[in-house]
Length: 273
Image 1 (cartoon, rainbow, N blue to C red):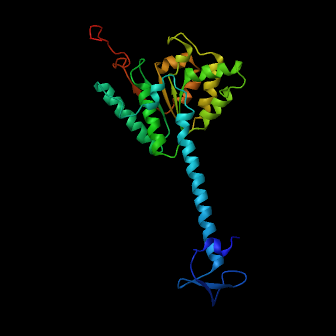
Image 2 (tube, rainbow, N blue to C red; image 1 turned 90 degrees about the vertical axis):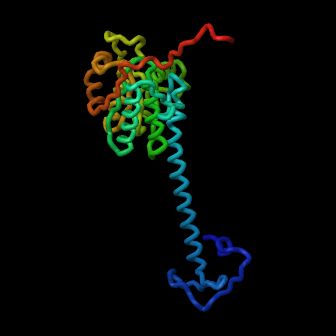
Image 3 (tube, rainbow, N blue to C red; image 1 turned 30 degrees about the horizontal axis):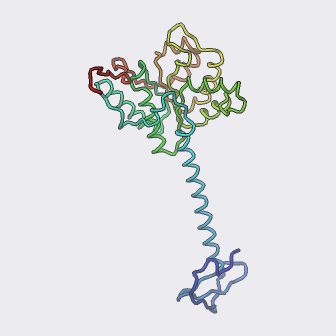
């Protein structure tokens, strides 16, 4: 127990009174401090309680910060510019893009309201699927007490394979399965691209299927965002039909059918240097 002088204000006059505090096993004489009677033991208990509460709050604050940092410290991006994606930076240049941006905002609002489902963003390369997916995650990360992560499937599989030859690497199959199963919200980006060129007759390797199966089966009660160039039928051909059916059983689709590749910018060779 701290001494009374450690918890009471300094440079004040303290005198014992004839009154006692009966809140203790043995009554304690009250002290008169600046015209107010105070029990030293009660004052110490109060200070200790305040300290414990502030310590507990600090633990909660650190845990919340650790959750928020998962998105930026542990995500695996194939395109690093996606880190800065947001709804505000998504410039809709067509009616379809404006509609899909609105659908992505609605998906975020449904997630925020506690609904559990899979959002599938489909379309050709460069149309903005990953941008909108990351925008959903950033809002969830900033406005909810949730842990989010963005994972390029191709980058994940590359890191896992690399760990076979580099035993010191932390990016093992177990690392990714445990991490992706744990988080509240996951985006699996560019599903299907890890096989190479997207064709309907390609199938995922048994190893890739094993990794994705472990992740998706562990997330059946959680929300997942998937971006892909593939249609659902193509996914069922490339992967296990039962797996795809299970992970897409409660699904909202955001489809890009007319949007051009936004990353291709025409360059005028006649402009002055």
